[in-house]
Amino acid sequence: MFSNDRVVWSEGMFLQPQHFQQQQRYQQAQLVQGLEALQSHVWGFTALKVDPAQLALGCIQLVECAGILPDGTLFNLDTQALALARFVVPEGARQLEVVLALPMSGICASEVSRESAAHSLSRYHLVEATARDNSADDSGEATLQLSRLNLLLAAKQDVQRSHVYLDVLRVTERSPGGQVSLDQEFVAPVLNWRLAQPLVSFVDDFLSRVKQRGYMLATNMGVPGLGGVAEVQHFLMLQTINRAESILGHLASYPGLHPEVLYRELLGLAGELAIFSESSKRPKTYPVYRHDRLGDCFAPIMADLAYTLSAQAGTDVIPLVLQEREHGIRFAGVLDCALYATARFVLAVRAQVPDDELRKVFPTRLKIGPAERVADLVDLQLPGLSVSVLPAAPRELPYYAGFSYFELQSDHPLWQELNTGAGFGLHLAGDFPGLQLAFWAIKDPQ
Image 1 (cartoon, helix red, strand yellow):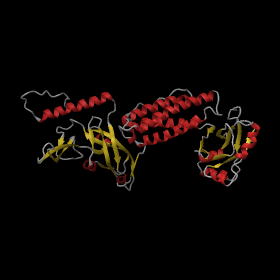
Image 2 (cartoon, helix red, strand yellow; image 1 turned 90 degrees about the vertical axis):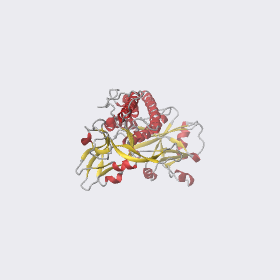
Image 3 (cartoon, rainbow, N blue to C red; image 1 turned 45 degrees about the vertical axis):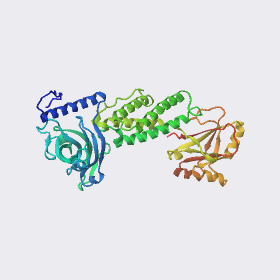
Image 4 (cartoon, rainbow, N blue to C red; image 1 turned 135 degrees about the horizontal axis):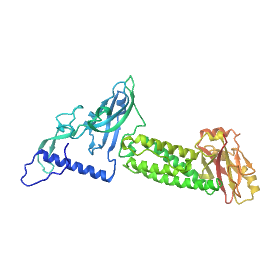
């Protein structure tokens, strides 16, 4: 093995290639040590794309590939190098890990071979290129001998002891017809987490659900809904959700973010949500971050976060947000169409009119139906869904003074159209001073 000590340059010394090679090793070691001092796990792919058409032919072919190997070697495969980065999957292969490999430094006496060969243990192979002197106007071209990294795609089991490598993908099987199937949950070590499709899919979906959950919680604060300890719990959940939405929104848009930063934030969120989901009110113990096994360490925490958010959202009382639209129409979206068959829909109304008058007049002034049809109901003076006055607030909704409660009836033909629509549309004719509306779906007990 070579040392990484610096060359002592002195006057009159006889220069040999070894001097420059040693100086290059020293500079490379300094670069790697400096990067590792600033941040751990400074290796992985910065670009990685596999040609899907080659999978049907039983081959793995890279079309984009760049990054840093674990020993600090930087690489960026050009068109010629990409053409060589091809691996034929053996017949009958199952659960085969394919890696991008480079011979270890010092494993071969000569680090440069005259030609590229998969069996060669030289780190570089020699190529020739012409170059012109860019500091002179009329200089001719010179032929240079350059060294190119001897990178190859290989089965992990074949190069573990002789090469430094990065995992690229996992082959689940090669069919008798030659079609190669890949493990879609496998995550290659990357320096930008958005290169890992399983992580991107989870974060994008989870962030969307966090936004929806936060919106639902926010609309349930300060209006008839939960009270007492339950209201405090909702407030704390909203506080956690708001923080998660802001942080994840930033991480999702920030370019080139290391996956460890994402893992750290998800760990913190899982710990905060544990108080709402775990009987012990304490966080679970999750795997230690492993840059070479991103899928294994992210999978448990992603599953728990998705479950926790779904469980918290799955309460018996679901607030439906009423959004103001043009021409006095309000819209309430319903994400789960199963609610039309399994839930009661209740409107709470308060206005600066006597309660008896409100309960009498409100049903006659209200047009409610599928959001796509409510404008026609108003314009053509057609009847919408009927509502009945409730003598008291449903037991699932604490009573608030001054509010009257109305339940939608599902015996109208329009009710069936809700299953194919986006939600409810609502129009209220006349003037109701100080009008306040709240809308819920109350799941029937199983």
